[in-house]
Length: 188
Image 1 (cartoon, rainbow, N blue to C red):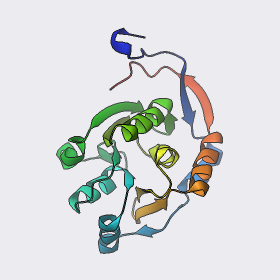
Image 2 (image 1 turned 90 degrees about the vertical axis):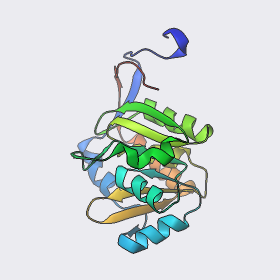
Image 3 (image 1 turned 135 degrees about the vertical axis):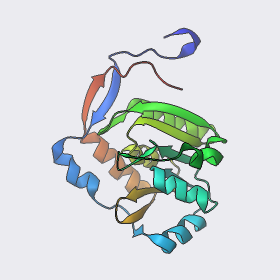
Image 4 (image 1 turned 180 degrees about the vertical axis):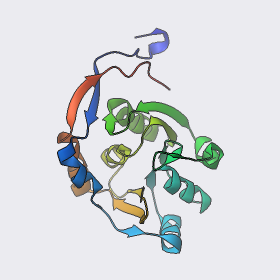
C-alpha cells in the first residue's frame, strides 16, 4: 500500500472480461424499456434507484429525481462527449473516479459502487466505460431498488432489484473471464 492507505497499481487486481460467447446475453433487455415522455414520467416517479450511463443520469437530474448513485463516463456510445456540468447536482452529494476499461468489470468499480452506496451515493466517474457497471449496481443495491440504464436508439431500461435479478447478475459475472490486470494507481 502507498502512504494514506491507497493501494498502488499491482498485478493482483481482478478484472472480468466479456468473452464473445456472452455478448448476446449481455445485450438482452432485462426490464421494460421506455422512451420519450413515458421514460421521463417513470424516472420522475422512481423510488430508490441508481443510473448507469450518461444520458439516463442526465435525464434523472433534469426531471428532478436524483439517483442515489450515477455511473458516467462522459461519452455516449463511446464517442459523443457529454458536458460534465450536467452532473453537478449529483457530484455535490459525492464524487469518485475509477478505472474500468471497455468490455470489462473491474473489482475497483464493484468496490467503489459498494463504498459509495454505503456512504450516501453520488457520482461515480468511470475512466474507460461504465456499461457493465449496471451489474455492480444490481449486486449492491437493496431489494426493491431500481437500476436504470440507456439502450441506444431504444430508450431507458428499468430493472427492479430482487433476488432473481441479483442471481442473474452474479450468473453473468460468473460467466466472464477473470484475469489479473495492472490498472495503475487507484483513483479516488
